[in-house]
Image (cartoon, rainbow, N blue to C red):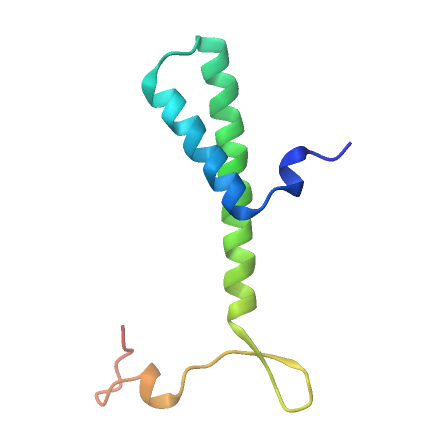
Length: 88
């Protein structure tokens, strides 16, 4: 059975994580409920990080003239300054 979190958008997961953090910060929940919320928060955090990592990898790729994916490279003048040091 698929997890309901699998069908949520990134923004919905972020909202859910923020809600969990706020509930835990308020301290109005039992120890058992706090542990369950903490575990759910960790899972959400991992899913969000995975989404961001995948997006970063996608954004770092370009297509060449033949439609093949190639790694993105900044133009030479943006990668190195005049002293040969890498720019920030």
